[in-house]
Amino acid sequence: MLEAERDYPSGTVTIQVADNRLIASFVTAKKLTDDECATMRNVVQDIASSVCDAAAIIEGAWTIVTIDTCLYFDGSIRMRFSNASQRLKLAFQEHAVVSNDITAINQHPDGFFLRLALDDLNAGLMEGKFLRSHIYRAVESLRNSVAPANENTDRSKCWEIFRTALGIEHSHVALLTNHAERHGDYANADPMSSQEVDVALCGIADLISRYVRWFKAKKLMQDRNIGV
Image (cartoon, rainbow, N blue to C red):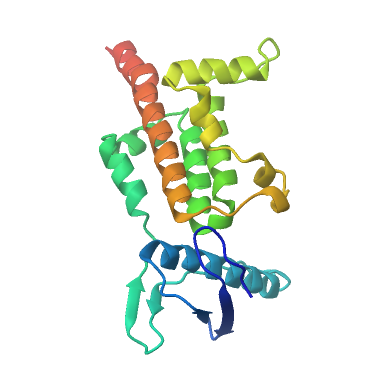
């Protein structure tokens, strides 16, 4: 049984997993909007993922659960889902970041910070219930690249240097932070709505884009000038 929340109505969820295929039903008294449908997909996917994780982990296996189609009660297609985040794709396009930028940084000796950040973002996209934690880890990886801590610099000063270098405010990082989720305090870590996911993805895309521009200016161009 699901109680009504701000972005979906109350109802009953039934889930069946068999032969690596997941089928779930959600019975509710009202017709779902597109946003409610997308949010319910995330809710059901989260429930199913927990069930599958519990069954598989004791066998030493990992699991990934994805739901690709929503049907009406008569079996006709209500909505198809994609694993690709269109909002994230558009955000990188808006900031004019392309795959060649990432490749150039990956090939640099200091490129592992961005690789780690993208690994975390990728994990967050695959396992949405921990998206905020993975995003924050990605931010910390980029911060360690721009302003690495040492015995003469305290942590708050490192964050200040990082924000200044990338031209962002404290609120930008705060937007991507949820300490309750990071520390396993899930009673106080509210699930993210589809709109909140979009906001978070736009925020991390903006930050990664700023980092790419910073890296190109401070590392790649500098190396070229030294080579000349």
